[in-house]
Length: 196
Image (cartoon, rainbow, N blue to C red; front, side, top):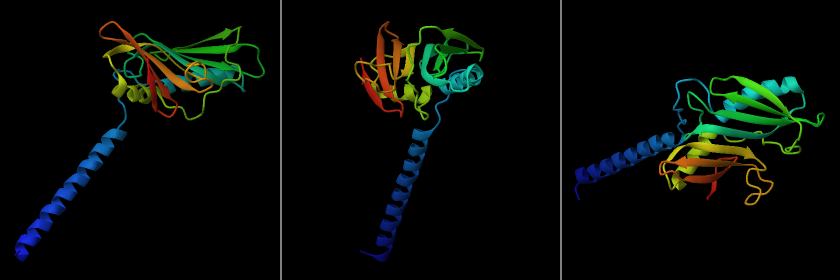
């Protein structure tokens, strides 16, 4: 084999290796890319609502503890649509005999209501729970239908008491294009767990 042939072969291999490395970087970047909301207003995800709710809960009592996040009318990507839908964050306190529901709508309007029959006492959300768009993204590979929207969802220790007792999980119930529903369960770290 001539020297020029060997040099050309190594150059070709180097180019292919470089191209593969560039592709790996681009694909890796896409896998970590942010999930972009399908709404024209800022915010709308569960963590956004949680931050607004937390302010109200701190005014209610300084020892407020978040026990649950629930969503009604959430879009199929994990954000509230421009109109409609709401997140409800429920707080409890060791110093109070009532719970506080803080409702945040798609326009960032915040309302509160005390609940006289507490059900979440002792349940505490982990500090580092995955936000709704990432939890919804974790369901994509396992979806059987084509989700139109989210009928209801919940993040709490009591979201899936039979399948995952005492484990904080996201339970996400989609309404699909064919008129059916399917429910997915996702861990607080973003691991897809099951569908039913």
